[in-house]
Length: 330
Ligand code: NDP
Image (cartoon, rainbow, N blue to C red; front, side, top):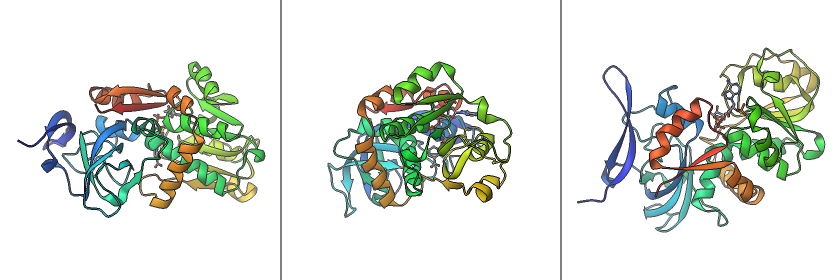
């Protein structure tokens, strides 16, 4: 009998009604790929929450093992870059959307999608960062490329108590930025200050309809929220500043005007983690390993086991999760 491992499987019936079950799979059940990885840690990202609850069409083939990111050890490889025993990370590339994902004991993927686990990090730590944290780093790299240094002025982070936001606040403050954290959860003020936020503003200040231009408040922004919030962030960005947009927690729309772009030379920087090319991924993980304080990483993450994934997925779409959720697969 081949070895089996636990997996979460999302299926759909003839009426397109989605169901989620825990099942046992073997390596023969996995999809094509040239590297098989024993998954040691994964996470529950907002997108995983949408996939499991079915609230948005993240899953695009059925049945599917969800889970968009993992860290683990290679157990089989015919890919020239990887051999048995290598420690690896995977983020995105359609894993957990069109390709069997992380919520299983083993994952078989294309070796080109993998990056090495930084030597100073464990699989658990890498997944405390996860796709949300790696996306936060992509945002920071984009701001840096645009010349937004700490001396240029404050940087606002929206959805600050969420996964992207928490990692962004921690890293930006460690790099010396004056971080303005926007949150809808006043109770998380101490948490955000401990991560390094210098100022806390209420989500309501940014969530209503935006004026074309408003008082200049920050040199840069990392926006995980979209919609009116992003429009307000842009309208309050100072001359020559830039905003990295990566999320849609408030909405996918952008009810903004061109005024910040044409009158203040503000730039809107789009951030995609899923198809980001490999060199930028390696750079992002290198910078995470060097720039993220491990004590803060521990403070912003909570750990669940495999059996806690489905509940955590519901919690994250209901806005009940603070920081990051790590799943230890043991
Ligand atoms: P979380 O759910 O952990 O964080 C989102 C945060 O947004 C919440 O914690 C909350 O922060 C805030 N928020 C929630 N609902 C609203 C609302 N209606 N209006 C205003 N603010 C709201 O998710 P993640 O951090 O994992 O992801 C954040 C976003 O980034 C998601 O939209 C996700 O899909 C996207 N994303 C995009 C990626 C990419 O490649 N572009 C990669 C990873 C994530 P608070 O309580 O502090 O107000």
